[in-house]
Image (cartoon, rainbow, N blue to C red):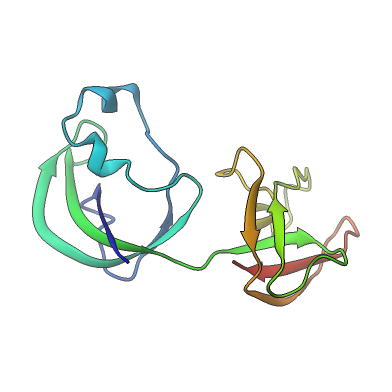
Length: 143
């Protein structure tokens, strides 16, 4: 089921995917459109299905304009440390690895900056093994 929300006009392109991080500024509290902007779940990954013609003013975005869009939740991929519980269909608690290996190409999918608190997810698919420079046995999963 799709949801209606707002995004900067320069980002409003059908097919684009993004992770919702929540309010960007305290100025959002004053806006009459805040309920439309923030009706998504923090840390979730979304895909833009349709960009509507409606353009609204905004205090935050670079051109002071936001577009009305329809989004659906997209599948998300994460890197998790392997254990016996990592299998398709199982439910796990997802949390950041808090890895300090800054030059690792996988750092963004191991260190989940948009997910502050651990959250339960269901593993839809195990996509494969990840080479970890620190030696951890890691798997890329789809949720």
